Image 1 (cartoon, rainbow, N blue to C red):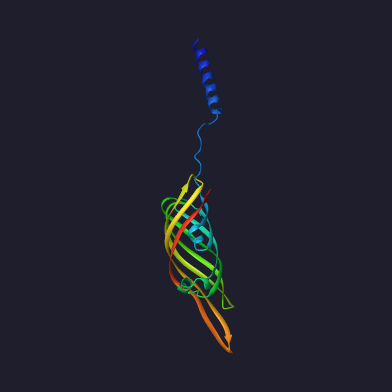
Image 2 (cartoon, one colour; image 1 turned 120 degrees about the vertical axis):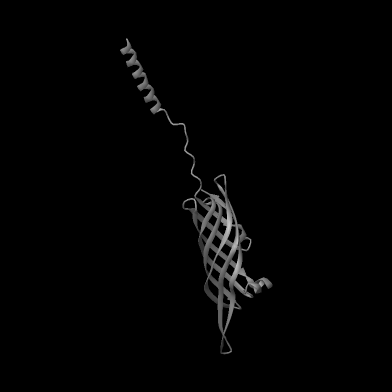
Length: 201
């Protein structure tokens, strides 16, 4: 009698264990946070500069970004502003890209407080009184800022800093048999601001 009870208990235990093993898991794995962002710089766009940025997080503490950039200005129509930046009387077009890193002091990349060293390169083409000149230009600097990811879908990022710029063109022509040159552009430190909007995935 005791033997029959023991066998019954063992059979029931084995059946229950098999059923539990076959039952589907109800626990859900937490979704991975976004590691990528694509954004458009609203602060640059306000100045007539198209800057689209792709950023990728590598671990929680660092991300890398690349940002193609295009801008076109007619400084001949801007008077004092064109003179201030050294482009007085110049029609200008520039195509280039920026790249850099963001080091996150709080949060997990690509969200949180960061410090960002960066570099930009541009190919600049300008026209001054019918004379055309072309030259590369560059800038190197850094920013401090903060990026927020909203609902794992939207990105908003703000920051401020400074860059050292070198963007100059030398216009050369001949007048009455005399070779002449005129330098236009700016080399030096300028403040920078970041306000970008985009998506995260």
